[in-house]
Image 1 (cartoon, rainbow, N blue to C red):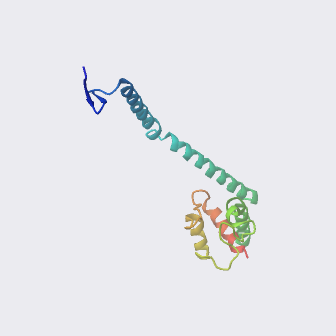
Image 2 (tube, rainbow, N blue to C red):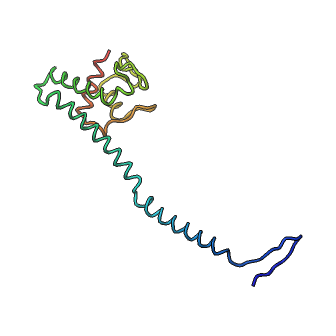
Image 3 (tube, rainbow, N blue to C red):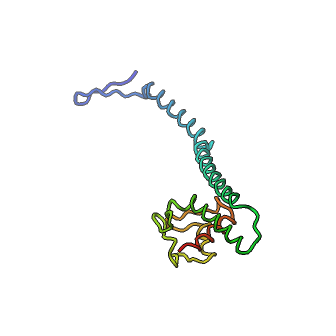
Length: 163
């Protein structure tokens, strides 16, 4: 039996146990928390869906890039014809990967103006290749996981033709 005390007209009841409703609710909340952690956090379910979505985007971009290579023809006899093929592939890739930031005329927008004689990080083939592959701070994403070496070379050749 619980003791009852009265202080200033307020009845105080000293109990050893919390009410059953609170114990049940606390147990249910604890059980739900363990199930939530086990299913969502430890199974990787939510992050796997995000990874799959990102993978689909990369695969679709690769397919677009490969179709651009196939559309220009696979066999080339070397020399200037090879450079022309790279420029053609680069132009198509530019239209799918770069136009959103650098604009259709390459004069800039979100990204920088690509028709300038000098770029912030250099305009040599090596500098452009590094920029495309690794990206740059301030918004230029890395494309090394989305396009292959020949496609990067095509983009570089195309960028060098811009004026």
